[in-house]
Amino acid sequence: MATASLRIDLDAVRANWRALDAMTTSATESGAVVKADSYGLGGAQVARLLARAGCRKFFVAVAEEGAAIRQALGEGPEIFVFSGHMAGDTEMIGDLGLIPMLNSVEQVTRHLEALPGAPFGVQLDTGMNRLGMEAAEWQAVAPMLLGANPKLIMSHLACSDEPDHPMNAQQLAAFRAMTDGIAVPRSLSATGGILLGPDYHFDVTRPGIGMYGGAPFTKAAPVVTLSLPVIQIRDVAAGETVGYGNTWTAEQECRIATVAAGYADGVTRHLSNAAMLYHGATHCPMRGRVSMDLITADVTHLTEVPKSLDLICPHQGIDVLADIAGTIGYEILTSLGPRYSRHYTGGPA
Ligand SMILES: *Cc1c(COP(=O)(O)O)cnc(C)c1O
Figure 1 (spheres, rainbow, N blue to C red):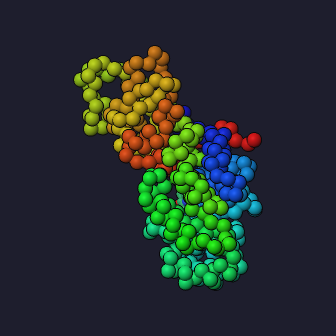
Figure 2: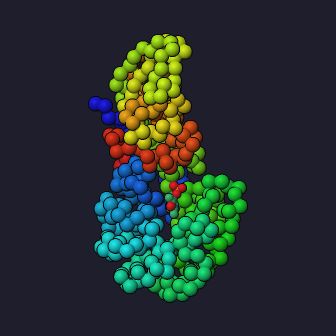
């Protein structure tokens, strides 16, 4: 079989969620962000695991994701939709009891007219200029909205992965100015904000990447292992080249393994001639360009013929790969392709 195997350690996801939860007091409830199919790791599997671990608040980007999570979880847990109430979402929101985080006066009007009495939350912009009502808009609709009993008021930090960035305190002050004294649960922090400390925790947190084993939660347990089957091994003579564009030339005789994954599986070409594959703890440098379905790596120094090589493993985690590729762990995870066979370990407790 030439499909690569993606192992997802559900015990590690749960341990990471609990570790982040333990950083806040019991006055703060830990939610979980399961948007984008739980960052590519399996929306339903992760959501069910966390629900069993005690999570009662789930966050998704769009209503369709909320529908899938509702199907996985059944009735009970709250599912908040960051993009709010978009035209065409009314039926899904109403039938499945999703909670739109209303982002604008337009969305407020749509929600209250289409689904009077249905739950909703409010998203405020505190400086990121991405989603949410700004101070003036909020001031205009706050009296009316607060009368309709919002479930949650939230905003989002732009620079929480840089603890010393002045934007953090600035956004905290803006959030407080807009919400202090209001008797509605408040949420400001994703993973980065949780690490900033108690001032940022409020009533509900929204961790995502930390649960999935990524920075800025550097103490996270690794969640993902990606093993790529070896299809062929060949000897390459000194002076010969490997791969498209002849970007790598053998200086001496060597052995090259060809493994089954490529940029069609989310392995970006930026890793070409730069990242490693691993045989256990032994690294095998990528040689030549990553192609659509194949990667080539140097296995000259291995004492046995490997059946597979790991691209993501404890020796080369998602943040190491991200650094090499000039991106972030989030993008490495959400790029993991549909061709991988996904295997879950751990889980129900
Ligand atoms: C994605 C997202 C989160 C989760 O962020 P992480 O950095 O992955 O913890 C929380 N809140 C909002 C609004 C988001 O878009």
